[in-house]
Image (cartoon, rainbow, N blue to C red; front, side):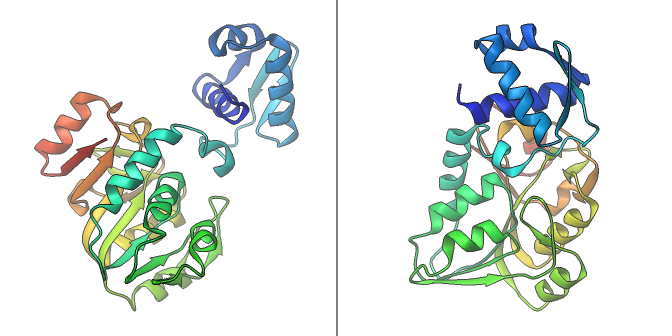
Length: 251
């Protein structure tokens, strides 16, 4: 397991249980206690947890993980999701795309396409695609989030001027009952605007998001037409999404 994957796993464990133990983490992750202690020190220096004798405690920073940590989670699955979602985009389409590690993989899958207009509020996605021949790039302005997304009234006002053929959004949670959710209320509002401006709406989310509910609602499930996820998603959750009328693609 790579270091970034370990850091992500440790933060998830802290989020779930409130504390972690060096010996237990060493057994679970298959590395030495010294390695775990170094990992905890790195996370402590970033103020993502509080070191204790023999382990660490939650720093009450919420469940939202840093982008660089999240990017290491389920990377092969996210790449497949991005490629499958890219296949839904027709030549000449105007597409909207929110930020996130899965939508970033979608952006990479579209990087060499021609005749596409991409509207995004993600700084990192715009940086990756800037200067690509044949790709028209529009970056929405707003308040910068730690997720590298630009959100808020300015972003929503700019989005209101555009018509999108298809919008792809990343989420932190997706259930039939609560629909699409994320960790930040302002981010949820901007994501909702992407959905409202699009003829077709697609959620791209790895299996860890399926069946999960987080703080702020982006949209009820009725606001989503398609979901692209990986085969690790809970079968019952996928069945309920399909029964609710959503087209589900698993890769």
